Length: 165
Image (cartoon, rainbow, N blue to C red):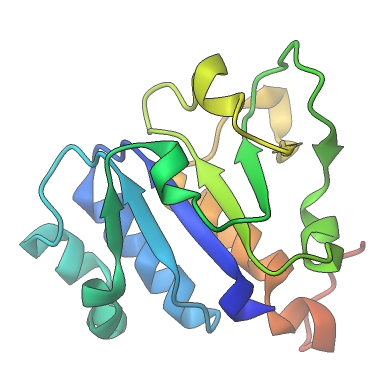
């Protein structure tokens, strides 16, 4: 399952969030990270330092100019959002992602200050919302880590992690 999931950060503003997301991706045994129009040129020192022990993955990060370009080759695109949306896009729970039968799944995360626009979400096959207190949004890198936990082998093998799903 790991090689079939691509994590896409749309217009990330902080290089540290890119690096910390990459660190989480490495910690959970994944390696596919793509960026769409990052604010800062990638790679850069702040991002590399934030990736810590996974700086070897920095060169594998792909940078694109658009979401359609980044998701090319994906069978399924899952867009993340904390806000209620008026779309006819079916919701998906994070613990259902690993059960999807697909050759390549992409999970799209929005920029730190305002997430994904309706136009950006319109590319998705599914909408993923992480339930939080008072509908508060998580930090970008924390949202990536949360999704990684549920799609990793830890979720399948029960490595001391109770995911309740």
